[in-house]
Image (cartoon, rainbow, N blue to C red; front, side):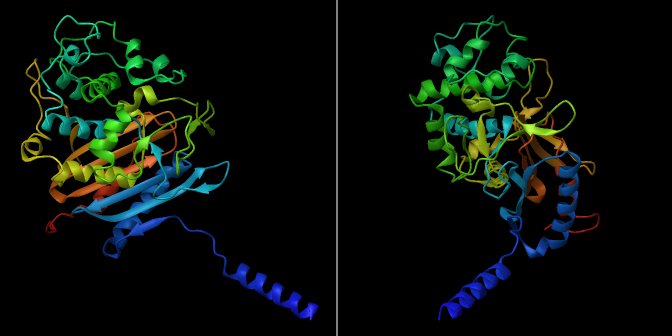
Amino acid sequence: MMRSFQIFILFFVLLTLTNCKKAENDILYNKKYIDEIKQARKEIGFYLQSNLIPGAQIAISKNGELIYSEGIGLASKDLEVKTTRDTKFRIGSLSEMFTTLAYLKMVEDGTLIPDSTVQHYLPEFPKKQLPLTVKNLENHTSGIREMNNQERNWTALNVGIEKGLEVFQNDELMAPPGVFQKESRLNFNLLGAIMEKATGKHFHEVLKEYVTDTLHFENTVPDNLFGTVKGRTDFYDHNIIAQVVNSTSLDLRWRLPSDGLLSSAEDLVKMGNVFLNSDYLNADTREMLFQPDTLGNNTVSQFVNGWIILHDRKGNLAYGREGYVHGGSSAVLIFPEEQLVLAMTANLTQDRANFPLFLVADFFLPKQGEARE
């Protein structure tokens, strides 16, 4: 009897082991685009390998439908945890795009007045040579300097958004407001502090109320060094001999409105579609979403509500943005005429990530002589 029982157990174990399969990458795809997806995966794989990126995500939508999404590589090298479509990555300055959505809604409901001065909401913020408006912050025409290397690598802990303003609030402006457009993450840190004052709520609460909960961005959350964030990737950097090592530990909560968010490629694609064709924003707002401003020096602005206006090598109009911070990088690309949105994330520090999104997009854009869908 005992021998029969032992044989049964052995047979059960062998059967279980035989049916075990190595986990595949987490992938969603539309078979209609299988050939294009195969080409895209080859291009992405080459990019990840050549840059020694441990883990990444890619997501693509067409006409508002998610046609391809995949988690690639490792979210944790130490624990050998695979990247999934729901893994949360540091997205750097793409955090501004979610802040911009909240800003636009707050303007629509009258909570924020774009032409109001910073001091209207923050009386204690030092006045500058010329009036500095809320709109100057949102479109990067404030003249406020960019963060320096010491501030980017600042290891201070538990610093709030308003407290973080002290690193630059007494500095003179680099140019008169409204004359030049120069990207500075400090603009959005100040804008976030204004949002807190206008609502009487912490920025993460504002973000949930206006954007992430309302639009169901399930994987877009603040990065909290001292909290447990389900599905958060580990963060990596290159050392001086290009080896992949664990990234410096930074508390980004004082930079939450500018580059302190975690997100996924799918949420970034969803965000792109909100700007592109959602009724979340009213008709008046939508009409000006991608309309450049004329600056004080009679030049046309490069940024439009956070987006850079671009053209690919074939002349196709596109809106794009990339983000990078210690331990993460990201990019989003929109082709409005084709209703095509692409996004990538990676868990490696990359200044100017140079993701191959234009190359990937080319597989999904009509070839010469083909009719548009």
